Length: 318
Length: 319
Image (cartoon, rainbow over the protein chains, first blue to last red):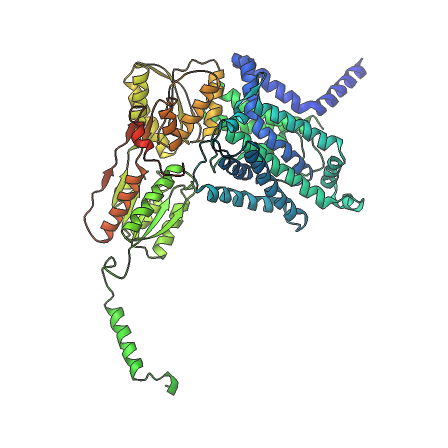
């Protein structure tokens, strides 16, 4: 009898260890559903998804970077640079929609490639390289706009962030597509295996014939392009592109990835975890606003929940 | 003395002239030859209003043939003390301080006063404002009072309003909150049902407003402490298919267009051009030793659909 109970608990433990973060998420949702009934209405669920989409898109890229054992602090600034470049080509009647979108993505991709090349070929620490890019890209966005927000955007451009398809907002669909593509790339392709290999043991990966440099450049380029995509979506949502947009977004993305169980030392992680991490942050922001919790307290609650979520995840793994 | 160090006759003349000139260094720097140099410390050149202030300061400096040394605190008040130190080291004739924070920018002002540099405070206030030689600005309390009174006019003196605030502790946030409170206190039928900071940011205001709307709370009006947040709230309201009046402050070009289109109920115009221009004039007057008034208030102006065309015409090209 005691043996079955013990093995039962062991099984539960194993189950928890795999899904700890998902339980934390459900706990949070349950709590908010009880204390703020409108929280679980379809409208509000759409709301949370839409608000999470920007951080979610960035977090997918950040997951790749952190699995290689790196970090990308430049995503918030790269988002701003892409947003102002894209928006400046999106005035009514100026260019077809493809031009601003493509330029926004390209600006992100190029910034990411610069990061990747400096990290892979020049062997510089990712923290330093992306810190430099964070400062320089923000400066470029300010120079490009003379510090003023880019306004007067075309209706077509506004649709990217404003339209919906069968009740689902376009930003959420874009987010979903990015997630699916990310899951495929990370878990079902050779590139994905290389990403884990580089993060696990870069030397061993190199010796076994993996082109680690190309993998690292690819990872940062991908993250840059996704930050660019987030910039296009966000500027469309707020119908303007301020050079100050996206400040601090890098920390939200890193928080989402870490809450999601990806190790900052590399080699371990999943897209699904990061998405749940991003959702936890999104649900918190939404729920605390709905409960009308003062911003002072919101910051304390968020800080505690971030650490608690990771603690729960870690504890269940022992 | 070796031969080559001994001055020849023209050498002696040059030497004597040099001594004579250093002895009677001109006391009037503003006269001919020496142009006046003014050091300007801005609170944050990523803020559109501050950029407009800079445009005005530069234009007036050019007109009066004044040289500028400009520094940007990028939203960090603690940097302003370093700016003033540099201005003193560069021996500028006067300083214009656009303080970021009422308390944290005060030491920068104190340092200028200690070193006997004429100082003009522009736009925002500092705790030790009395020590400044002059202040140019528009009292934020009045802006808050103005937008809240306009909201009450729209709502006929009663209703549930929400407030989108600037960064907590920022002097403009504190004073506008105070003004809004004063105006609403006159209407017993008015109630503040929620207030939250969106840090002057459009995207953040959009999320906060969406969350308020989906909490099922009835909102009759939105009072935003700047236009960026007002436009973010408007986006959320229109996205939800609702019609709720929104008011803002600053009269940025985007907001003026929204007022003209009948989307934004009202905004409050703060005259960056008049503030910047007068600040430079006062600084030059101080250098030239002319008497100046300590408090120089530039009035706020309420912008609604009726008078918005006057302001739209003033939008600089490129917007």
